[in-house]
Structures are given as C-alpha cells and as structure tokens.
Length: 329
Image (cartoon, rainbow, N blue to C red; front, side, top):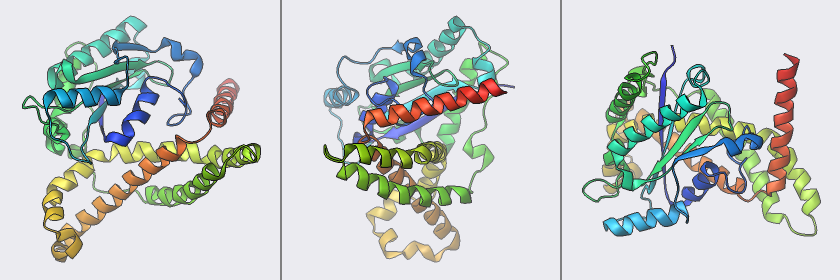
C-alpha cells in the first residue's frame, strides 16, 4: 500500500539562498537535482506564495518582529518536503493532487502558524509530485527554536503519526511510513563512507578548477569541470539524499549523549565520557555524520560557483540519456 511522506531539513543562514533557488526555480536550477525537466517547470504552482523579496530577508524580518535571540549557528529555516508514494500521487488527477497538497499545507499551518510559513511550492517537473514548504521556526513564546518545534526522535515520530492521520482521513488507502525510531536504525552503511571519500577527492579537483577559471582559460576549464561533474553530480545527489535521511538519527544521538552539555563542559575535547564503550560509539557515529553534513554544505557551495551553461549541458545530456533508455524499453 502507498504511504505518506513528510521530511524535514534544518537550514542555517548560508544554506537558505540555495534552498530558495531550488524551490523557486531560480538561476542554476540543476545544481541539486539534474532530473528536473525544465520543460515542465511551468506546471509548478504555489499553495502559499513566497515574498517578493528573498527568503533570507523574510526570515530576518520575522526574527526582528518577534524579537528572537539568535546565535551564529541558529537554525533559521526549516524545509519540509511533503508527498506520498509515487504509485499514489500518480493515480490522482491534477485537481486531486492539489487537494492533497492543500490539505497538507493546512496541517502545517496548524502546527507552525501561517505567519511563519514563507513559501509552499509544488514541483511537477520531477519524477514524483511533491511540495517544498519552508517556515521560520519561531515558537508561540517568540523563541527561534527548531528543536522546540520538531523535537527529538520521539516527537518527530509523533509528527509523522499526526500527518498520516490527517491525510488518511481523506485517503484511507494511505499507510503511515515507518519512522527511524521504529526501525531503530543505528547502522551507517559502509558505502556511504566510501562515497564520502570519493566525493571529497573530486571536490578538491572541482574547487581548484572553479577558482582558477578566468577569461583566458574558460573554455578549457569548462571542459575539465564537465568531465568531473558527469560522475560527481549524480553521486553528490545520492550522498545528499542519504545524509538527509539520517538527520532524525543525528538528532537522536545528540539527545542521547547530551551533546550541548558535553560541548559546554569541554567533555568532548577532554574525552572524559569516552571511557564508556556505548557512549564512545554514539559519539563516533555522531561525529562522522556531522562531518558528512559539513561536507555536503561544502559540495553545495562549490556547485553554486559552477557556470550555469555547464550544468545545463550536463542536465540536458542526462535527460536525453534517460529518454533514450525509456524508449528502448
């Protein structure tokens, strides 16, 4: 049976611009997903329209109006991805699909407040229709706190249950997807570490090429960048999807080892808590996953600097390749 899908991604200041460019289809639209079919982008639509200015300016305005205290590393935006299994979404006609996303938006309005939602846009130009809803995590007490709203792993599981109940009330064939707390996922796949190492090597090559590009060598440099990106882009996309899927596990680990308190008391630096084998394993997993999150941020940053025509050319070739593959089946 088909199942409901609700995922969250926490964004700090530097990642908000990239999020907006992807969601609103601005500029280099193929950076995070080469599967976008630009010919269908005109079919995308908003349930909640974004501000005339940028996401970042709207976030700053909301924080200022609420008089929230912020830190340099504060989560200022939460991106919510809303959809359902492909077999369910694709059997709905366009009016029923819109009804699905409108119902989901109303669910989010009740949970986080309409005033905090910056945009809710439905993408019809990718494989499965889905909605990106972004909100500034300001609580009813006027505190900027994604953790208070999303909570730990247990509360995230409650989010999933409430979302499922809301959607199941209208479409009773839907099932609730299993959360990380139910599957008790504690294993980081070995292939993810290998992929991280492979991406890191090519990231350095890509960064060097992007930095040395100028008017005198641009043609040759673009050819070298393209050669790297042909394999780098799909692997980066796979890496991003897996790392993002592990975020509930990351938050769970932070709660289990009281990460903030350990940082505050310098226990991490002094390794005092590492005498316990179980605690050491949790911390090692958390450290590795946080390193991957940082690596993902660096990858997205360098992709922002790649010439648009290079990305467009790669995306078009990939689209044609998939089209030929489908035709041959």
